[in-house]
Length: 273
Ligand SMILES: Nc1ncnc2c1ncn2[C@@H]1O[C@H](COP(=O)(O)OP(=O)(O)OP(=O)(O)O)[C@@H](O)[C@H]1O
Image (cartoon, rainbow, N blue to C red; front, top):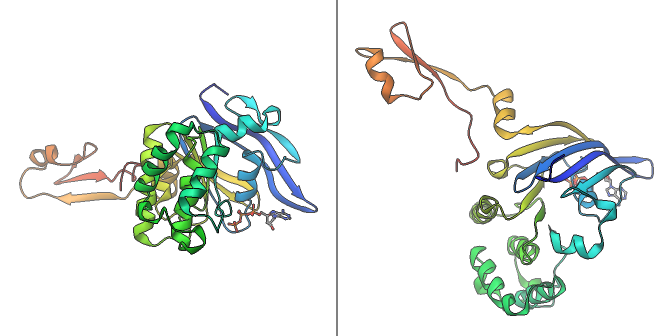
């Protein structure tokens, strides 16, 4: 494991009584990358995030964050380096601004920067006109975005998102994806997303893992997994006139085949919308 590794787990397992929620999971996430953990309900995704965020301890196995054993990290270190988006972390009776200000203070955001950071993040997430609303009066989608605003306010190096698009309408989903894409592209945070529904989240991820009944059954680069799972279709084009003359106008992998041209379509890449 190199210093460029943000998360490395070695066969982590977590039992709840007789139930095995996470079963021998080993994974690595590079610093600045986005990793998607996919799996059906009950697969162990939230438990994995809670283990990685230091909220739960593994029954067996080891976790290293930024090269250091998680077990040795102090709660202050974890708090400053990690952000976790959960919808249970907001005070319903406080306004959105008071929620974010309270969290900024708890997370030691420099006092002079608090107001500016709040204004920036609510602007980007389309919540600027709801700063004065009590969180209890916000819609579910707005709360999702408010929870994300709270999680990123202290600019964590490692951001955990649990079902970030759940309950969002298509427009809000696109707004949230655009915000996350900007965050990931900036390279400021390593982002770990878990979800049972893709909703375009895969387009943000460099790598994904699939969790089933607590076991990581597949993991790898998104493009490689898509190519293996859905081999790119091969097209054959009949050309009026000389196939060779048409070649410069076609994908680089096109080649002349008989009286036509053949080429594969490349798998969708992370930068595609
Ligand atoms: N605190 C707990 N006590 C007992 N069992 C638990 C606890 N937390 C999780 N589990 C069990 O561990 C398994 C994995 O749960 P987990 O919440 O990690 O799954 P998930 O993939 O996040 O599911 P979902 O997509 O429904 O949120 C489930 O069988 C769940 O009942």
